[in-house]
Image 1: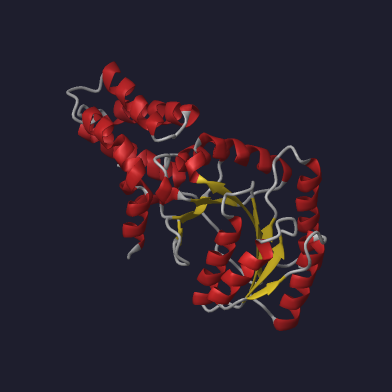
Image 2: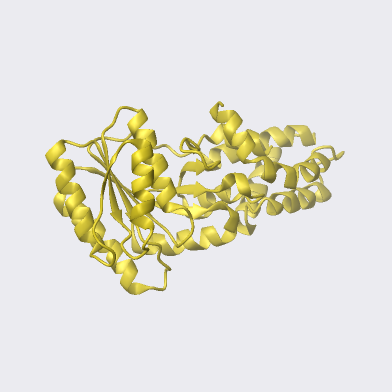
Length: 297
């Protein structure tokens, strides 16, 4: 299945939730107050969020004025351009050795995302080692071992309750010894109000910075798309403690709240890098702005 097909299928519930409303909006007779009220309601129903929706509508009104648009169908194309622009970030290519740390609250799918990323890089011909730094959840290491076997990558882990930073240290040592291209770090789920856990995350980052100062170090937050605007709130809090480089959005196929991608981009200026659109090992796909917008509109 092509990327476009996968993301279209993943956005099926979101599109179903707003398609009738958008059909009504873009078949109205004029670009009047009623048009913008209906459009606002449609965008909010996709969980784009109040701030992002208001910003988009203001930008659309400016476009309509400057380009002298008169038809709702013309406004539709202008909106698609604005949406694409809002989620299209200029991203640096990876360099190697590459270290990717995944953080997030419990239950968002970090461990599964690690396994799928490991598979992605392995398919691209990169050597990969995974640091099982979630030492609090008893089954986390076992789960990673399963994913590691599926992807054919090494997994470094310690006993339950051990120091997560020590696991990362050992994974880095292993990577150095074997000239490994990619180190993936799984971390324990943590709530923003658990100061000790947030400090632990910072400690892991310090270990990476000290032991691999020349590595390309990326810090990604994993969010569950089904939580909608709560995902935006989580991202705001985590970004206060660690310098995030982007978002991995899981469970996009299970929600009608796919518009949260736009809210994240608009309110946090953070790119969504990968989206989860299924449970298979290759169902974590690189985010594509044009396919995403076409999947909604």
